[in-house]
Image (cartoon, rainbow, N blue to C red; front, side):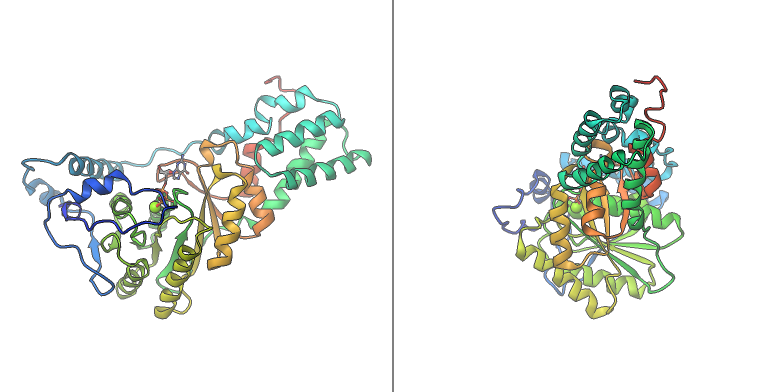
Length: 402
Ligand SMILES: Nc1nc2c(ncn2[C@@H]2O[C@H](COP(=O)(O)OP(=O)(O)OP(=O)(O)O)[C@@H](O)[C@H]2O)c(=O)[nH]1
Ligand SMILES: [Mg+2]
């Protein structure tokens, strides 16, 4: 058991100066005692991590004599995820709870904005515009929305500030509604291949873990491909998610070719009749053209096995990056042709308005939102729920909360 991380790790490949340094975890792994050689190169057989040892196997495993602290930490992480996998996930927090920071930025929390400015005047519009910009809808979109509301005030379309608030909610809902398109896995083709891309730390691997649970709950079989071969820790992170969700992970050593790993995984998934294959990739800056070209290669290589694959190319974006998310999305779309977006970390940011800006600019399906680090913290993007959570309908109704 756990022998995969006791293998001697290959030294990490030289990185471009602009990349983040290799995490210390990799160095610790390099010091691990060798048990089995790491597979080498394009033709090496993929290492497969098969979760769920039986209780008997676990009980029979000899106690480690001298434990490397790093290995011990991983072993404990595995024990934790096993316990977590065995327990039922806790009920998810409400969306308004997780999106509270953005709601506050929009002034809707505690009714602040409209209670301070109940009259339909320029002060109210100005304060509203500032709030929209604070919540990161972007200057352009905020300006458009306010100009439209100003024109409608002149036409006496609203009886009071509450009427204006409802109009703003309706405008924002109309903006995102067409893009709230859930990712449904159709009955064919098999495997349905999902390729995840995005900048460093956006939440790709975590989202894959959450998706794996989601699809498993739908009764689908899932396989993961550890296409982030840049950092040894990335493979281990994905294997932990594999363990949590009881799904197989296909991996090679760090430094191997990402396209090769994903190619192997597609062959394995096809041979085993797996329903959904989700491929991880290394984070990369959208401005690094050679790394973007590598993603295009992954797509080409997949297409050699199955012309229609990948069936979903999912961009994972950290919601906290604000307006920079727009540049990321544009460039990834140009390089690999996206079919869907996931916006993560909306629980920890006041910049949840970026979702509106993304819909306005990219006009791509917004599949999911990430609202926490746990496997249950991935929500399908439902336009009404999102608007209700950050601009509650009842705000300014004189509830006395402010
Ligand atoms: N609060 C919160 N944290 C998240 C969410 N999604 C991911 N994270 C955290 O963000 C950090 C980075 O997530 P990863 O999944 O490793 O990101 P990644 O895109 O795979 O990163 P690289 O592989 O380094 O490019 C981790 O600490 C995650 O737990 C989310 O929706 N909310
Ligand atoms: Mg990752």
